[in-house]
Length: 126
Image 1 (spheres, rainbow, N blue to C red):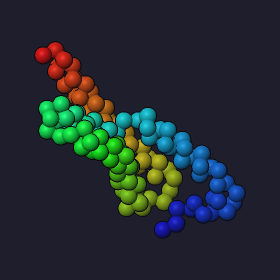
Image 2: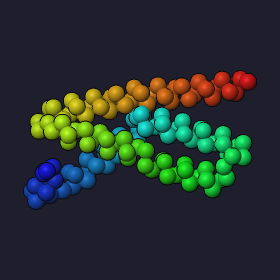
Image 3: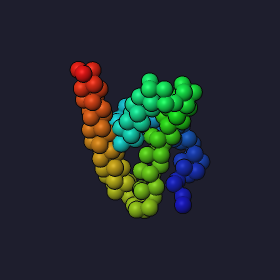
């Protein structure tokens, strides 16, 4: 499987890949995804376990840090693997597929965040 990265670098446009990766990283951290909703849900569960003495601070932070760095990466790995599995070779098809996958993730991610916020507000009112 050739992604064309080698060709871009050989043509002297390697910086384009770096800039594109940085822009993608910025956007990926700004757009909520399904992974964000899952992470925040787990974090809230572990924080409650910590507050109730069911887990230690070390366990809480180990889980929190590990999941912070793996859940979102896993989500984007699934998006990439889906695109590769569907093997669309045209830019138009790939960009539409990518926007659809990310867009679906955004909707679910925003909904999950809103649910978590509503639960937190409800808990504060108690």
